[in-house]
Amino acid sequence: MEIVIADKSHSKYAEIICDTIAESAAVRGTGIARRTTEYITKKLENGNAVIALDGDKFAGFCYIELWGHGKYVANSGLIVHPDYRSAGLAKKIKHKVFKHSRTKFPDAKVFSITTGLAVMKMNTDLGYKPVPFSELTDDPTFWDGCQTCKNYDVLTRTNRKMCLCTGMLYDPKNKNKSEPIKIKEKVFNRLKHIKETMFLKKDKK
View (cartoon, rainbow, N blue to C red):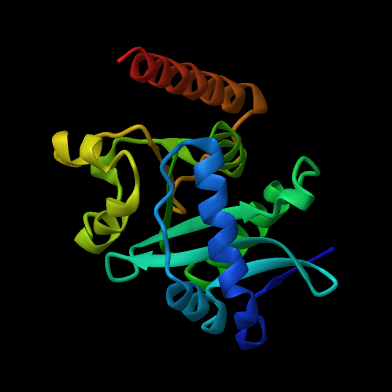
């Protein structure tokens, strides 16, 4: 298995990446913003993505988005092909794209919005903190990208203050980068409780 920074030679995988993201959203029943094949191709070709390959077979993917004139970076579209799940590949991809983001855009804040507990755990391990949406980018183009998500009505009803996603932020200016593991675990467990409560309330409606 090889996880590499993408380039033009990987554009042939754009269609299967889009299909895998769409299929995952359908199975999980949670909101994942859709991206076109053209959009993914651009990310592959400009080096703002990482891809995992098993020989020539697609295994996983994640891409970088730049917002707020370079003040914010998001690692989006994290996906692992069904044939390679439950083997720790997602975590390896997440660490690879995070390191690439920090190298390419060292002064940018790295943020994430997600409904997935596994992604929250990975973010917490990397030093992300849970934050209100007001601390994330105010770039309207980013939030417009949520329109294809099934939960977009929640976001609009709250004037972009909250949704079923949790906002998380890594600030490179934060000096407390080596936070004790127990504190990280407490942060994640708190996030897990909040997220489970939110979905429970939604299911009862």
